[in-house]
Amino acid sequence: MVTYSLEVSRGYVRLVRTGQRPARPGRAPLGPAPGWEDVIDVDSGDDPALDWDIQKALYNNDEAGWWTDWPDPLDPAVEAAIREALILRRGDAGQSARSRMNMRRLFLSLPWELLGPRPALISLTYPGDWQRWVPNGRAWEQHRRAFERRWVRRWAEPLVGVWVKEFQASGRPHLHLYVGLPGGIVAEDYAGLRERTLLRHRLERQHGRYEGRKLLPAIGGDFGGEFAMWLRTAWSEIVGTQGHVQRHHARGADVAVMFWSDAAEAKADRTVVAEYLAREAGKWQQKKPPPGFLKIGRFFGVWGRPVGFQPQATVTALEPLVALEVEERLQRWVNWKLYVLRKGAPPATDLAMRRRGDGVTAFGLGPGQAERLLRWSQAAASRKRARGSWRGAGGEASSDRHHGRSA
Image 1: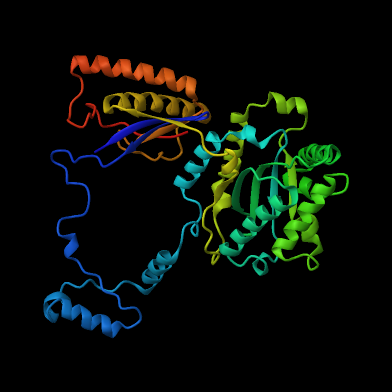
Image 2: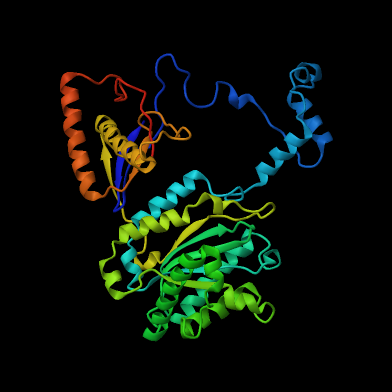
């Protein structure tokens, strides 16, 4: 049974389809082919001879009967690629498109006001010989969790925000944290972080992004004071470079405040900020791990759920006819937005296409637009139902040529 629902957050409207669509006349049924349960796969581990004996026993020792239908062996390179793919865990091949979409929706549904008046972007990096200090994703994850524990112990308040894993062009892993700074930071130290953030933007405009950052002084002293020095020391101790790599103590941690003045913070639209953070965190070029770096796990997550920093969205069940009308209108919004982004130019590549009814996410819409959208869709569905314009027991529309997109 197929069910539809409308998910509405502060920054997006999403039509969700759950369940399995019933097969149409003339089409093959969905699901496994008939008789699939009769296929037996045997693997005893590391003993091929034992596998041979078990296979023959299962097939009543009819060696000639099943051997003639046995597929030809694969090329060794293909077999090696298959084995490598089978041992990869979540995240080991990079962040998937679905994960990036989930991250974007998460960012746009979080109550960013809970970060307080001092939101900031904290970057935690590793030394140049990073393989020595973070050999795999499991060690990386341990460092991330240790940082959270140190934060709570030192500042006596929960760490609230989101974290994102990324890789530099050289393959070096690093963490980006979008969090609220502790309330225990004195005003002078926070003012120093603001001054440094403004200096960073001036240097980047004058010398370029990377050269400007090289000229930027490290955090600490006049630029962050006690908090900055604690951050530098805590991260270098977690990684293990304290007393070994002095440059990592100075440059392993970086802070950039989100708002450069109290007036800017008071007037800021948190939804716009969330969209900016989602774009920055979703760059696919920075989600590709270097060869051999495994056990990465999730690429993003949330801190502060116990204090209410968790996704906020309303979900409304929809009738199938209303859902298809909602999808039509969401697709118009997405297509128009894509047209504007391309400035009228045709797409360089075809967008991912979905069958009608599979759902669509429209970013840039909120609860107010969703309410009007639902009202219009209900009215349109009522008119078409009265005219008998719908066909199909599953509530399908007369056309099946529409595509689901997101933007």
